[in-house]
Image (cartoon, rainbow, N blue to C red; front, side, top):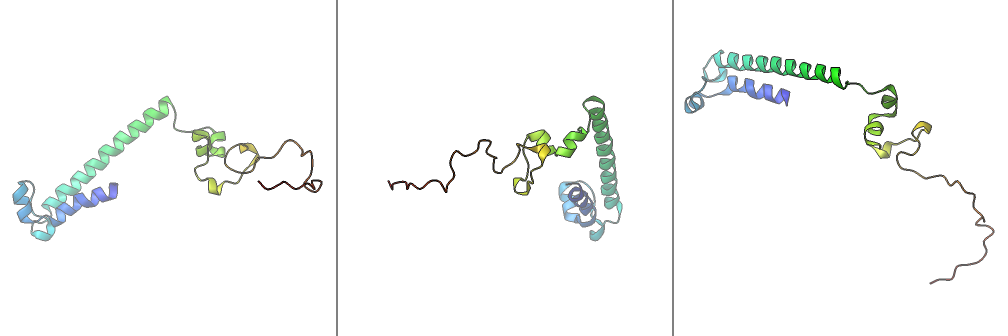
Length: 130
């Protein structure tokens, strides 16, 4: 959004035709339509002022968050991954490789905790077709 907005703002200072400037009643023709650098300078100043305002407001917001609830997660949450610590599941389960400390999350076979009472070799009876 930032780069597209900057380009759109500066493009007005480059490509505004004299008919458009007269029709809207604001500004002057762009650099490529005989208006000189006046309109381009106004547009560039608007870009610089907007950047400064957004930077100051963003830094103020981040500092307020840091002072109240904090910006960082714990080392354990970083190691486990934010998908696990924030949502309780992996964001990309197809890339899941289970590890011992994360047992119980994701997809995969669940080990049986009870030994089978009879093996398949010992079973000789056939099940009748239904």
